[in-house]
Image 1 (spheres, rainbow, N blue to C red):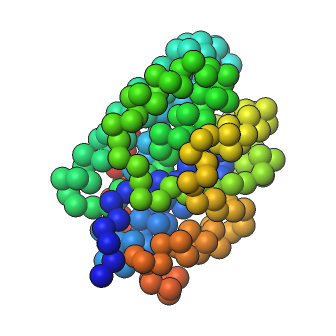
Image 2 (tube, rainbow, N blue to C red; image 1 turned 90 degrees about the vertical axis):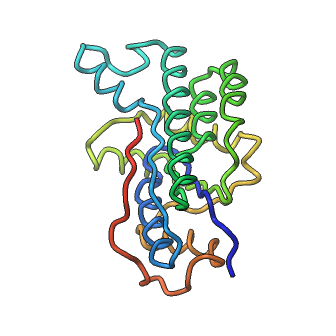
Length: 217
């Protein structure tokens, strides 16, 4: 009998395919008999960016400042993760996390606000680590193309490159399962499922329909 799989996290730079793969993984786990729920643990940066443009500012950082942005991100992501974990504790479902605390640490490093990292780590320390944390890697140039194609937001090459380097610099990096996020979604999904063979069948067609999506800030 497979051991309990309480939490799986997918992290990586914007455009690496986290959201797509988190949805696919939740579907695959549910199809295999492990009830799973997708949780998008956003930090609110995209929402703040849209608000900034509405009031005539180019981006979220110009709206609330670097420290303000990092504070808002840290709090909103903490709340999202806390709600996701509580929900899955009450329902017995596996939490498939689209973003995790490492995303906040990487954001802080990419913004050059390292003094905030100690505070963030103190706050996020209350959360038990995921059973597996997948770091999806993709060339920042390809990530930029993907973001531009989806057309819902914009990230600069400078930011994507800094974020990519930040993830690789984290002390947790050695414990991540690094997965090449380039290629077609189903190909990437197979790479992820190969690391979860204890809970997932080898048959890649054993996918269920949509699973509940839990909105986060």
